[in-house]
Image 1 (tube, one colour):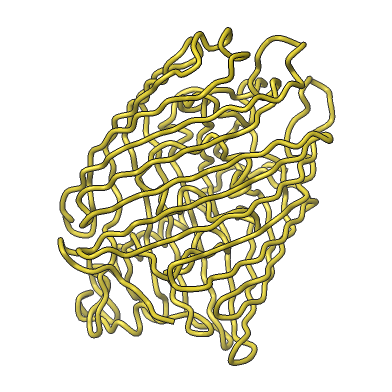
Image 2: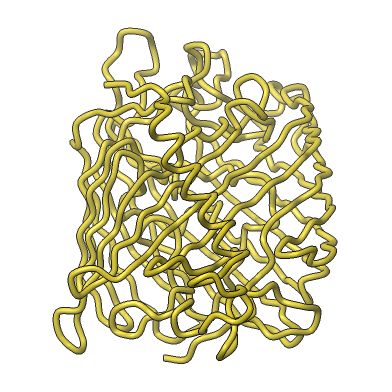
Length: 458
């Protein structure tokens, strides 16, 4: 069932964002934000777990993570506003490449407060990409997944939906060493895969999605999800029921459908620098059939990943994620490997890179050769980039940057692309909140040059 854009929904979450901005200016009880109490602003969750651990959906990041957000207090509500905005020009090489001006973007508001002996949180994550990404998506060679105008999207990444998350979460301690978590909503992320790439610190400065997105975190927008989990201070076991059908090409609605898919995930954080996960899912009716009229395709997805964060002197961070994913569709298994890293020096200079290897069937690549439709091809890409940030100006960090990439194609694909190692580049401006600097007796403040990032000990 499709739920169209609702003015009531828009109004309610506009008020959430407005209250975030107002509270940032006024502070709790009308006091200036820089006089608010740190304990009220950033109280840890159940079992003393810091908020820096929270990733997308119910995923976890290492505790030694910065928080790029505006954070304030309004009565009992702790409010946060996250976001990431790029204005980019993309030029992808080869005969199947393209060029495009556009904007990749998202904004997320969250309110959290104590309730019934635990904590409740409300989240809204929105994107303007239905209007800021022209056509069927932005060009990336070898990216595949979803439909546009009834045809598979190939060598491009589809825009995100207007509603990326509309969900609620409740957490509460059961004993001194055990807590439970409930999460769900009309738009959310099931317990599957690593933290989704828009929220990963290792991917934050990289404007383009991974070409292996549909092996790891493509379910980060699911139109209907319920998740339950239990956890200790260093581990979590969780499971989800969700609607696994890929969003349709009308990006402004909510495509509700029965929760016929299911997933499970286990987390282990051996120290404040690491977050490890293993997960698997049966995703029913995930993708349209390869030909019109064919039934939708079920996917079994399995992932494992490791994320490492190392804070650096001067307020920077080195963040790295390595992941392995496997999809099984109609009896055929394909694999993907991802390694991405970001080196943020003093919140001024950010160097980032990503290397991927993925197995993709011929029908995913739309090779227009029926003899190759079931053939599986090993493809890859390597990208390096740099961002120079300025400020902060208030609570915001603008920047400019560039990204260069080379795609790695097998000889059999050369006739379709015209070359085996096509190169591409992207130039962009970026705009995101500064990392928060917290100290006793102060509220959330943007980090100044040379500050140390917020960290938590266990």
